[in-house]
Image (cartoon, rainbow, N blue to C red; front, side, top):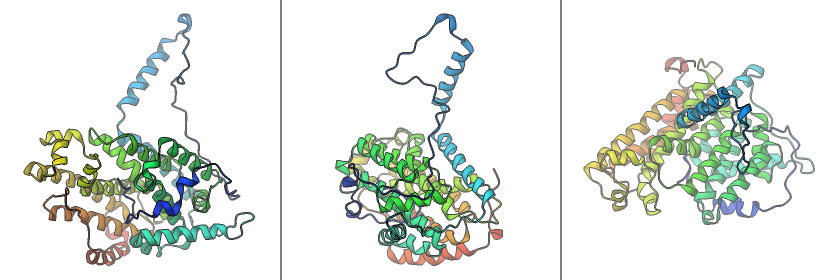
Length: 419
């Protein structure tokens, strides 16, 4: 299942060969990067569980009953927390970082033309290479980034490339060689680049980006977790489980990107609401991917649809594998498309809060991905043997519409209320 990035991408089987991750996970010399080091450690504040393999010794005379009750209650609360609540905590953290940045320095644009010691101009070359990859594999989005300031677009290119590389680990031609251990090593490499120790030139571009913008490491970790889910899960029992998957593989992109794209100085929305809208766009894009690729995923033995909702509709995995469009299937698909459109509607309200120069590529992505849902309907909900896609003429027509919407003053649009 391909990651539904905030921008429109076209999958190419040669991409992961170009990045060469299978070779790069080996031990080897890494680039030493001297710019500001950013290291954000995962909080262990709420980790009160004993480590595995270590026996807990209890002394009956020293047991404090209120503490035990509190621990049991907190464990029960943790189990009851929904996926949306877990994700919202990540949103709050990232929004707080950006709010702090806005207070301390309203101008987020920085100069990335720094040189790595002993490698004059290497960092600039790294950003240029990220731009080349973006131009080759995400033409529509790349075109939109050209309206951004040079600093912002370079940073977005760096994030885009890391996301593509991560997605290709489980969806690319080398996916059969990827193991959980390989993903662990990719995450370790991520932590190194956040500490200012990139492995290669593409990592160096992202390392510089996260040092200059208030981008938290957690969404990046969560995207890798989404890749782990693809290795171990092929069914989702309800929408709560599917929501977490959609967040991990796509909603994370919005949280990574907003700090770079910037919030409009005149926006009266809170950072939390802007990040929440960006998250909604990622969820909407991924749900659209899932609905478009039902037949393709079924041929791989995967069903990315809520099992309980299938059952309520009188359907099962067998119906999906049979690939027959019935009235039951049409009714089920209508409800799934309705949900995806609700997320798109929520996302659209947030695009207007972004920095004016950053809106066009996001609007283009939203309009084009939303049209895929229209194409599924036009195909009479046959997403088993027909692939819904937006043809070139419609894509070209959508670009000026997206551009026009990005120019409409905020005062003429409903804005997100403060949270």
